[in-house]
Image (cartoon, rainbow, N blue to C red; front, side, top):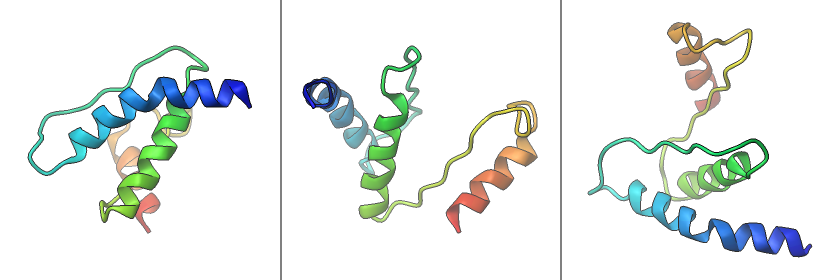
Length: 84
């Protein structure tokens, strides 16, 4: 339980940065990069929920051997499928 609280407190700054980036008057891309096990997936899950609750269209795709980054049509298909 203590580790979870520390993890959440450590992510407050990042969450606020992302929430500000989601505002209509912001622009540009946002890249989240960190080491294995650092909580990127948990952070993205939280932000996906926040965005969906605030009327944003939310979609996702995962890169793997079936959907490699050099196959844009497959990635697009995952995006469209995750919206529905």
